Image (cartoon, rainbow, N blue to C red):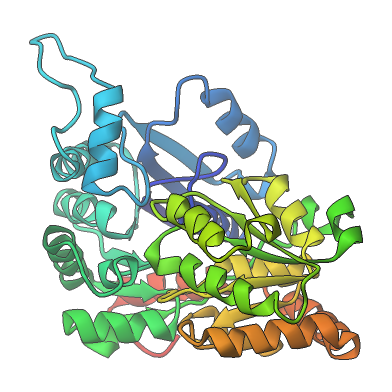
Length: 412
């Protein structure tokens, strides 16, 4: 089977979980015999050798071909972030016109037109598009080849904005989901959001929960930090945006420190709320207990998990939350929002409503002060992490491909 896949980021160049999810899915599909052509915006200058190294040295990725389109689009783009990037990359064509779209939506449209050319050049049986920026590309590719379109939804616009969607983005998202032959959602939580916000039939939406790459050598490396010798470490790792709930993490930290003062709270990530979180820490008088690392990637992410006693994911709306699986695989227990897809599949975890900072604080204090309970949670969650892999979600996705090709939409 040959799949033409449209996405927006792919390791090593990624800004969030979407890139990891796309890499893991293509790897799982590849080692289950599926050939994938992955189409994405062009990597930064000089990155080609890194891509060749990653794809070429991994036997499991031998069926994966990367096609890079000259574009400055990136995952999690907003109108504002695109405009900022466009101003930095003002490249003019032979007639003096800008090569790239004047705004985010025009650039998405430009990318979708290029998809028509690629659909003519790349043999494929199925078209697979990831999230709203790729949906029109998938629709255009289907116009050329007539092959079925699978739209993958990792997060709705309502998730990303706390229920205050950008109308143009939500319209594009809706049109893609409506046009798709079948939709893959990364959790029941996401499926329900799609049904509620876009009135899509539940029969059209198939749920495939994510797994983790058990071949990643960083999971099996040991790491110790001198920070761990001087007290407890509680970790937040994610984008500093409203969706991820960093403000609830800071408010919870204030309450925890009343009971466990020798605790450091590490916040890893960047985003539009970063400056506010630093300011709020100062207002609460806890700056000396807060550490802001900025964006982490690669092995540094795994180091952050291994040095932490507990990972907290207080997301306001988390379609899945792959980072929680990465945490328990690294041996770090988790406290996760009940408003997350990953809470559907992980049993051995502390769970709270994102808004209940008192409950989160109580559970953090309990896990840090009562070592018997903590050790049991850590052992059980790490054992549970062994059930997650890349083959199960890949096989479920292949089943969906086969169903859409035959028109048989039975249970997956």
